[in-house]
Image (cartoon, rainbow, N blue to C red; front, top):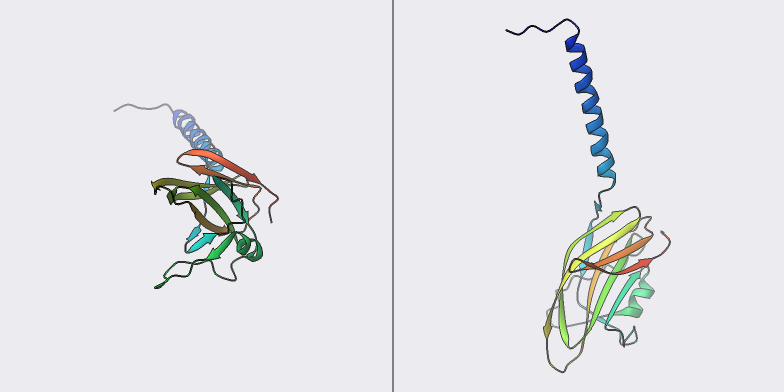
Length: 170
């Protein structure tokens, strides 16, 4: 059996405590730099107004009220309509981010996640295109998040930043 001198346990305990405190501090500091996931919802069953940036191959928008939303989007009524629509009373508590792709393809979107860091919201999504010859389409991705003190929204498509919209938080 190995015997320790009377003061050796104190040094060992101080070293362990010091290491533990530094480890907790490092984890906390690193955690502060991580993106915080945000709850989000997506909506469908809308068409894009032909007056909203009609000549742009892609549009990005941050929408803060119903009037602005209705200038960009209209409701596409179809038989057996089961689309998930933005609630009429959404804007006092929610804000909308939208991506619109135009051209001879039908665009499909998949939201990978929405997160925030230092007041900047990041909307990460993937896109795939189904080319359809000569017809033209305007395909929207419509996402809402709870209002917050955000200063910008970064759109990240297929892993690449494509647009950043800066604004004052509300």
